[in-house]
Image 1 (cartoon, rainbow, N blue to C red):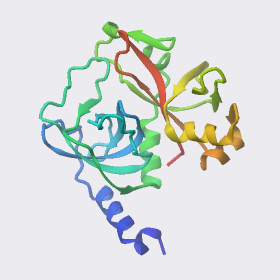
Image 2 (cartoon, rainbow, N blue to C red; image 1 turned 120 degrees about the vertical axis):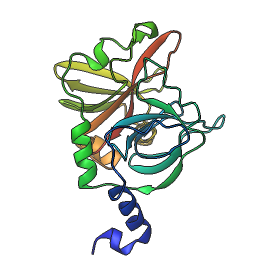
Image 3 (cartoon, rainbow, N blue to C red; image 1 turned 180 degrees about the vertical axis):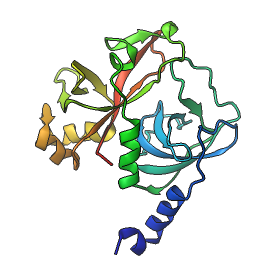
Image 4 (cartoon, helix red, strand yellow; image 1 turned 180 degrees about the horizontal axis):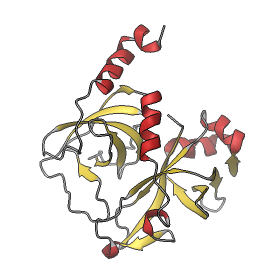
Length: 239
């Protein structure tokens, strides 16, 4: 018997996701209730698959000061759009603002999620986010390119920890490019800290994470001293 048949909570989440009224675009009506499947979350931004349209959206969440986001990959969350969703950021065209903290409803995984991730994976279209190097000036963005890329790596990924500052980095190959990104995925960072290794890849990385990483969720930051930076905000399994 399937787990969702034994667990009423799991069954309720499955029904919520699979019976969600579908639409062709993202709901941007201020004050609306929206539902998302979390792909990655930091205090700056939470990247979700909008369950009504299966598009990628970035939620700006008003976390309390000194609170660290506790949302994890494949959490199903409910939020309410703010009265001003702040759609005027040309560097982050997918971003909308929530009125309050989202409500975590449960988790959802399986074949449907695998299909979504396969469909959302970024195609080869030049360098990551349209520019080489770790950052680009904010004033160069025109809202024409996405600020989120779900990467199915050609090589890797590999986790690396720098000894000088303890930061965690993700290295992977993508259509001929050797990409290095600062890692902001809390699960990956804690994995590196727990193993006390300076490099994890292949089977060792899969064992330490608890899954084989198939996708690298990459995002652009809000402006920092006038520049938007590339980073990894999630390592994700196939689904």
